[in-house]
Amino acid sequence: MTIIKNTGGFVPRDRNWQPAALTPQYKTSVKRSPQAALLSFPTTLSEETNPVFGHNMLGDLDNDLIHNYAASGESAIGPRIIVHGRVLDEMGRPVPGALLEFWQANAGGRYRHKKESYLAPLDPNFGGCGRTITGEDGSYEFRTIQPGPYPWPNGMNDWRPAHIHFSVFGHGFAQRLITQMYFEGDPHIWLCPIVDTIDDKAAVESLIAPLDMHRTVPMDSRAYKFDIVLRGRRQTFFENRVEGM
Ligand SMILES: [Fe+2]
Image (tube, rainbow, N blue to C red; front, side):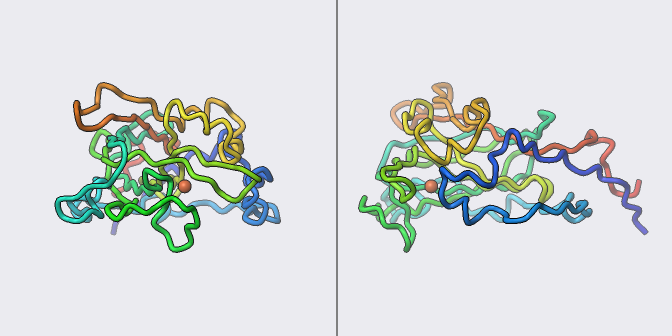
């Protein structure tokens, strides 16, 4: 019989760093946010040790949005970029085997979605979705085109900064993170009602990927660096080993 020892649990979410659920300048949050006080439940083992993903679930072009929807010999239209970084926990430890999924508008700022209403044209060679899994050092990389900003029905004239959406599965459901990456130098960042829901300026800056000339490919792609920090475990990894030893 396997004895499962204490797995430690994850550090609670810092609600001073994360945006509040109710932020009326972001209109959708008014109906989405909880109407009653939250209830707290202790996590269970399955929530602290799952999910687990393997590299063999990935397709060859899953991390290449320039080509993964394009016809043979074609490629997506737009500024070619590499997005790379590391997934770390709050203690600075790499998170290997984390599944990253990303989705974005095309270079004109339009999504491939049936409810999309922006008049910018679709790119027949761009789907806008991809995924990858972090390596042993928590690193990841994918290729795409730089998305365009787009208008959205919130205020009278609100525009989203250029951004890439990320979903991250770490080593437990407590580490699940949905976030957005912005691009250094985009003036829309500081005008955006969604960005404005984040009170801490340093937290906003952590979502802005700087241009990384060290990882550019000459005559091919520029690069942006985006590190992602997930919630950490209270104990060190060594203390956390669970397999009834
Ligand atoms: Fe978006």
